[in-house]
Length: 328
Image (cartoon, one colour):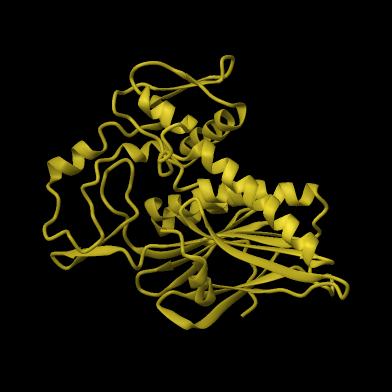
């Protein structure tokens, strides 16, 4: 679950100030099935509205490409032709899927867009009364595996090898959209702003005094207390949590972030915040850390350049990557 923007009040506090001649303009709307808060700094209301309109159009354009719910999207066509034939796609989608496969290799499968092939045997809407059988869980991952996504760079085609196989961009799509909207606005001359895609947050520009924007992170188990204040230098932060959607069986808590390799829910972590240059990367890594677990996840992040993270486990303990600097 990507934290909805309204929940960023306890999780992410963004302190903004604008140049004297500029004002901050914000619009909240539903895009890609989620809440987006788009903020720009401009010297007139007319310019602010125009800039936000541009961002909305860009995010909507991306949704038409990557959505698996729109029957005529390129992603839907790939899924419809799984096990049948390759599908030629736009270069943009091809490159996104290529990066997703690279992230799958990097995370040893903890991140995998073919997770969408999983049967929906876990339900977190209150309807589950018994634990799924081991056989059902095992069968749910039969068609999951990024190695079965076949890419042809020369023809820019995508082929899912297995009949019934699917891909989905739920763990990376909003981060990608935030990055693209930010890049477009920068190209149009917008000096500062925020794209907040339901917890996938990307910022650029600085405050009036030249200092970067600051983000405060709170403990999901103690929402009234900010424990970390960190600067954001033209980069992104993504916070993911799994503390609201879960079921309990035999005294054990099973949460909604599923390990694509095993079919079992992740456990031990309730919140992950990842800081990176791009929201796309931070988005994918946040989900991956849940699957990896705290110790493996921290070790993994510590090996990456320009990436940091904060993890809150189910005991309320806060752990950070080695290079992160926190102002308490």
